[in-house]
Image 1: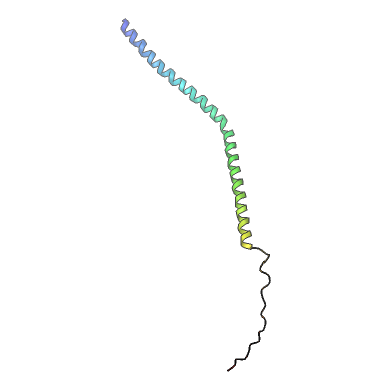
Image 2: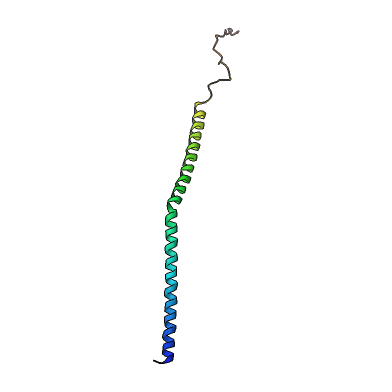
Length: 98
């Protein structure tokens, strides 16, 4: 074989080897990242549900307070400060003078 042909084949092999090697390294890195994230999902899910539960509890408390305030406003005050209403009393009318 000629020396230039051997050099070209070596160069093509190096380029293909580098491409395959970098693809393999990316695949290994992606797999390890996937495994890491897969292990962290249950903890993240529990954290998300606890945050949702906290918001739901706060919204429920606010809704109950608003309902209580509306019910209190609708019922009104039992203590009447105006006092008793005046009763009707018969009045004596004068006879008109002509």
